[in-house]
Image (cartoon, rainbow over all chains, first blue to last red):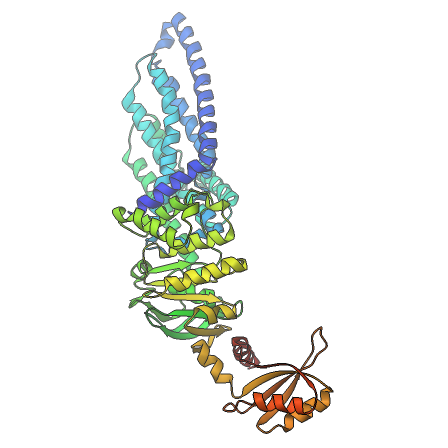
Length: 255
Length: 314
């Protein structure tokens, strides 16, 4: 099975190089720090609400801790995901191994699928880290698990768009740093693209606001799956992977 | 086994190869010979399915390299010139990976990997990191990778470049062993290599094929006369004039001298006559010292240089 062979090699490479360890460590530390800070605030607010019963309305851990935490995780992903994808094509191009892969009996789409799934696997391992924080919280009181599940699904979809952008940028250059910078730039641009929506106004404004990759996360964060947001993320990812295919194919023509 | 017709490839406005046509039969070892930048790598890349041609067709084992690329790639092993391997992988893990991508069925995989490692003599470094291997070992891992799925055709781009003399001999021996049922094309700019390893030579220069034949025939083509090399101790001009008067001699050429200060004479004579006895007798008759006498064979170098310079003179 070709895709599986590519997938296994890529995952192994993440862990034979220091990349995966560095990523997971930094991610765990930052998530943990954010979780502690948010939890401390929640604790203070809980004490105050004990004096003032009116404030206690709607105070629960899912609303006050999990949601802000996952929103912050989305921001950290913006910074860290370029590092997950930067080497996938750039390194192979630089070392010339891509030329050899192209002469193996494997379709370009299988090669791309193997690499995408490997990056997705690393990303899912990363997502398990804030989940550990949340499980610690679960020991203290009831949580709205379905809503949390939906929020995680949203994070996964958001992460997939980062992966698609990253794979495309990695296929454009043989320099990993350039690939990472391009990925971060493009992802940030799509994050803030709706800032100009108000001034643009009209149809253009609507289009710009629809293109924002973080705006579609709002519904997931609230624990609601809206089909337009789901479809946006899937479309964005598929389109990014399609562009990656084109970029990979163009190496052959250029030689 | 390999049929190439009017293959042309442009990089922008410049043609890397132009109108290249040739055939290679099953079981042959063919040398692709040419100076650097002649188009050897481009031709191999097209055959390997990596690079599409601008025009023309190439078929490997009956399949079109462009339209039926996967079928061709299943039957072909390729080693690019710079031997691209993954330095962070171990030899066995790498070959396992290649076998899996190349679709070797799981029950056979271990056996095939072991066989390829033994054949290329890399089994003693099976658990080493590829990045820590010497150039010679890496080359052999590269060849092991190419033969893993037992391909009908093997393409090797400059397989001996950058190796020390001992490693070169080992790799050449390995290539000769690999042939047999398999068809091998190797590119090189080292002439003796072609004479030693290949049954046929394709000489390519500036993107065009300038000659295609067995090494022997190519040499015979430019050998219009038999040649004898003499080293004589005697007055240079007199020796030369005297040798020219020996019956059957066409031409005498003085060969410029090396450190020993002695003069050698290259005597060209009719191809069907062996004048060595006559020449020796003539020199002795004059009382000169004869310190060397041997037939001068045509080197493939001369064929090559003649063909390549003729072509560039246009």
